Every structure is written in C-alpha cells, then in structure tokens.
Length: 136
Image (tube, rainbow, N blue to C red):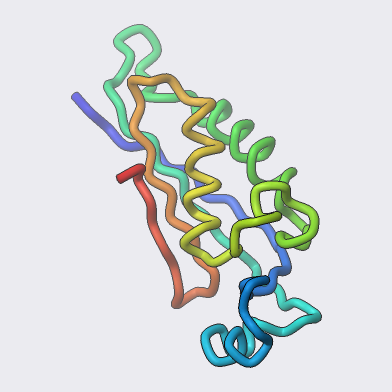
C-alpha cells in the first residue's frame, strides 16, 4: 500500500533573474522587474511529499522527523536569508528561477532518501505562483 507523507517548510531568499551573456536590455525585456541589479526577495513556501510503502514494523512511510531534518539541513539552512545568486553554490551558473530552484531542492532532498521512496516538491514563490517537480 503506497501512501504519501508531506512536510511544509519555508525560507526567505533574494535573487535576480538574468543571464550573464545577455545585455541588460535583453535581460530587462525577458525578466522585467526580476532583473533588478539590486536583487529582490520572496518568502518561499515548499511542500516535500514522499511516497512509498508503509513499513509493517513502524507504520511509517518515512518518519516525519527525518523528513523535517532533511529539509532543514538541505533547504532551510542552505537557502534561508541568503542571496541565491551570490551565496548558494548551485546558482553560481544557474539562473535561480522557480523552476530551477525546485529542481535543485528536489535533487538535494532525493539524495538523502531511500531509493524505494518517490519525491515530489512543490515550491511557492508567491501564494499564487508555484512550481512542482517529481524527477520527470
């Protein structure tokens, strides 16, 4: 029997959407206000959903405390109150769009989970704008 266990978390971070190989004008045309050279911030919300079989001994798919600790170490400690472009190694050469952020978060969490567990991460950049990634 496969069940999904989810944990909600949040972090605050600044970023700038731009490509180094484009002119300021082209970046402005494509990314608009998100190309602000002084950066801008979001209060990100994320939901990490782990799906797997219920362990007959524990009754868990995953201990929520373990999932909480993974999210804290891999996401909150790494991204909270950071400038994603400047402070987070994964975004040194990767534009920190919501799409790229959710893939990075997925990869960081997935690496800490058992191979028998599936993962989906949903990242809210604003209450109305969000992206999801499940490794496909």
